[in-house]
Image (cartoon, rainbow, N blue to C red; front, side, top):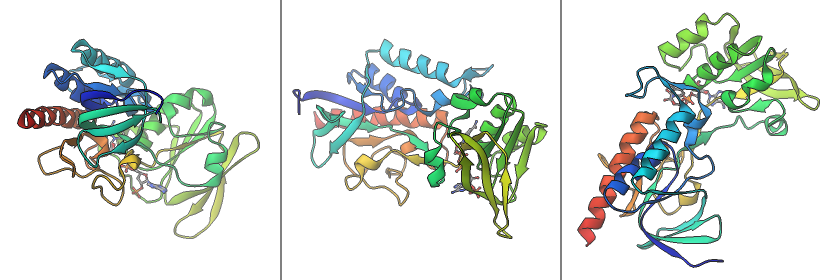
Length: 312
Ligand code: NDP
């Protein structure tokens, strides 16, 4: 360790709606929370466009703007918001040891994990090869580069439909490639996709290969029923097949399910270790909404406060 360990009452990892809501409540309860924002300050909402289903915004709000507001509100009550990523944890005894950026050690009396989830990839070699050169997992970040061009989006959930509909406003043609014959997305989102004239859904196909020279110029698809192969001419390929919880550093220390979602007690954010709480997408594979994440962030801070009060 290059610098001296620092002791805090309440350490929050992650800065999405769960983390900031936990911070607002913890700061107001005088726990003097310290937050490390993680790899993507503001979390997944910073790579989305309009948020129309968060209560309190009758006209909707842009995801990145909403997260700036969350941060300001958390800081207004004294949350110490810092850049940095937790790279190791020791939860074997309390207070817990958390290493930030492989060098700074924090000793935390309570820990709130709100590290969220990250986009999943298909696992194709060509997907990694062309990442940043025609392949992306974020239409709102990279869609601009494909203005007037042809793109494909892989997936059939709300994310894929949202990405396809966003891209349809910029691109000449959008193919939505789905492995089944019905979408998983909500009806509202399906409707948006169906009514866009330049979106074509390619049912029952999976991407086998992304092809190109220096940048992408096509995608090879396989018909899941017949095994037949076909090629689409596209300049951009967007992967939108769901998310993976950011829980790797807690493996072996906290109970999690087979896909890595942290397990919490019923009606609680308490994990398998007393004093460690989990909120938001890292522990929720069912709802995964900003508002539910915020709700569990609030629960985590209240539970951390009660836990500390009981110990005193
Ligand atoms: P989902 O898990 O809902 O959907 C993933 C999609 O990708 C599914 O259609 C799935 O197919 C497909 N898929 C998964 N793995 C593969 C693979 N290896 N190859 C091909 N296709 C694959 O994830 P989302 O990110 O879409 O949504 C997550 C949650 O976030 C949901 O609860 C959603 O409602 C919510 N959300 C809400 C939004 C909003 O309200 N504005 C916007 C975005 C997300 P299959 O259907 O066959 O399983």
